[in-house]
Length: 72
Picture 1 (cartoon, rainbow, N blue to C red):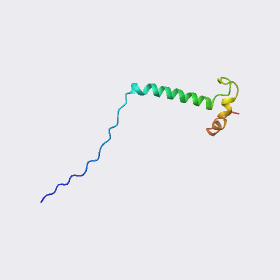
Picture 2 (cartoon, rainbow, N blue to C red):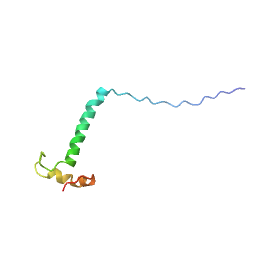
Picture 3 (spheres, helix red, strand yellow):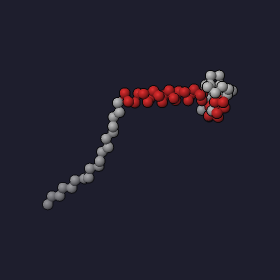
Picture 4 (spheres, helix red, strand yellow):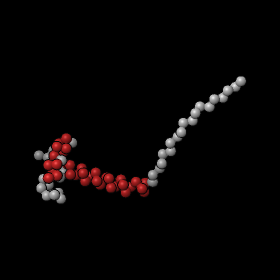
């Protein structure tokens, strides 16, 4: 008496491939957005801000020190 027991086969997940043409515009957009945010946190002192004055500098002041950027 020979019994053959087959182990249950686990379902496999297929990972979709996304072409670079579809990712590139979003990567560029988020990259530029990240650079803009990094500029406002690290370098903006109010000289070229859209709201004139030190408003943005004051809003990100503590975060700037937390990230290690000197501003005084």
